[in-house]
Image (cartoon, rainbow, N blue to C red; front, side, top):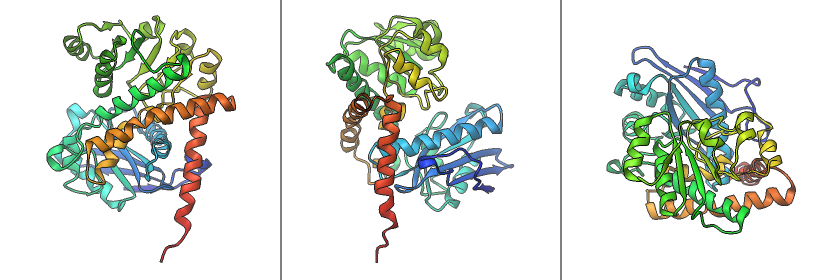
Length: 363
């Protein structure tokens, strides 16, 4: 294991470097992982473990650094007393995941002594957290059978839905999504639940996913939904709301140029392909609900588990994403800045104001 703290790492909250980046390697189990802690200004870092077949270690490093910084802002804006961290395991979870690998990863998490709590993300699930927990107590997002919160995608989708309602209020003066055409790109764990909430709200839902089987299963449950041939076809379609719910970088220059939706509000992390896209969205009159603001329901759910999980309490907290999103959008409008900048300012303000209290020494 190599522990890097270098000044040339990308900056995180308040222009400071990531606090800690740990490279984890266990040859016998095949584990290759990176844990990144962006900030512990508000408390121990919390963020999921992504199991993904990255093309290179450099690609994995870039992803974990961006994701961990996003978690610092997400946890701050969600009102949690938790910092931001993330981990990636390099490999194909369908082929490489094993008990030995997960337990080896748990040992590395444990060496951080509680500076980082892990949870589920792309390629990892609650039963995996149970395995990791056999080696460390710094795990959340566990199965209900083991006292955990279970599938965090349920409240992630609920939070995105609340953010979408708040965005509708901001744009159209009404929280109702009835009759609105909503495009959902990616119908995996979160997109599937979000589709169900939109159907219940009488929205006209159009979906797409690279996994044709996932789309077909969804159509069996909700036969009234439409299916787009591809994400490219979806973003060119006539939409009121576009919900990116797959991997990051969904909002590129090319997408923004052809997008017809008035609102972008989805579950994917790091949706802006590069700095400057947020201004292009604003210039086109498209309201962007910042991803780390609206997709915080999952982290709210797993954070609640640290207190002894209560679903109703966690759902009530996740419902607050409506007010947070509306605050961000109204602040952006009042200050004449894109919503992503308004969200960043609000998160950074909380990290400064609350984080400084930790310097007051208690007896």
